[in-house]
Image (cartoon, rainbow, N blue to C red; front, top):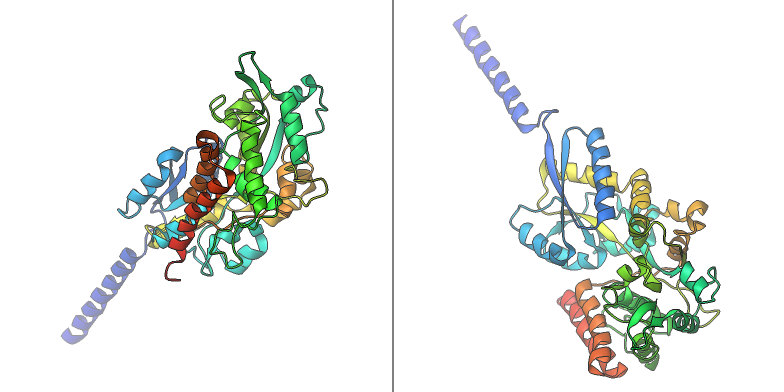
Length: 430
């Protein structure tokens, strides 16, 4: 009898231990998981994400998302210092051209196949998103993408005797119209820029990713390892044309009204090349500005159209694991859903990243979004191992010509050499 009682006590004790161990291994359903999400500070994007977080938390009451934003200028420095220390974000939004260095730097982890099957992503998302696939692994996914287009001030066109419904469609028309729209004081001081000239905004992207290819330049070798910006005399001509907008034609100046976007928003510039993300800012800060949006001009009438597509994309850092990784994946899945894209697109003016949106007539025929949406059909996205190096190389090329009197050949040759360093570093040992 004593043996039976002892056995029952042992079995009861073991059962109790098993139950207790089971309870400690599995979080309670009511236990709240907190994850951090970081992005750089851009007002319309902050508002959009805040709205999406509210929706996500309502649908997932056991997950709290802490939203932190930082100024663009020190965003990357903050990231690279925080993630290795284990105090940074679980989900972070990066420019697509930064991905390679964050991958090789071991800051990120591939997106879980359970939530983001690669074949499904390839089928449902814009081809632009291919830049998020490195070594056959999906490292990030965007809510939206953006293209470049031409924006023009219709009131300026009317005042200059130009048809406000007919923006420039070729390089030559852009020069001539910009000259007619430019206003200067008797002493030469610029008061109205015919063209919002700046390389630090979207100017370097337009020059490198659109103007050079429109002139017949292949940007990279067929294997993608060698920078070929300066592979033909036409490349030097394209760079000279861009520089001459300011130097010879004098239709704009770097730094006029602080920068190109401010000049256009405040009615001080007549024509600009900008991204679809600018629509949200214009709607908020310049609601009375009468402007149009058109696809980018081609070099010669009849040439194929071209634009540059890029995107900010959401990644999961190596800091996320266990329950936090699951919560981060659920959050990323939510903010890349069709419903989230619809909200984000309306708030920011950027273009939903799923293919289903590009086929919608209400978007492609929209007076403002249409010029950007139609560009998705022929947009190109160049692989960049380190976008900051690529960007600086082209900005410096223009500055050498404007400020130091360097020739187009010498300046572009140096730019190609500077950019090549980024590719050499990335492919080293591969």
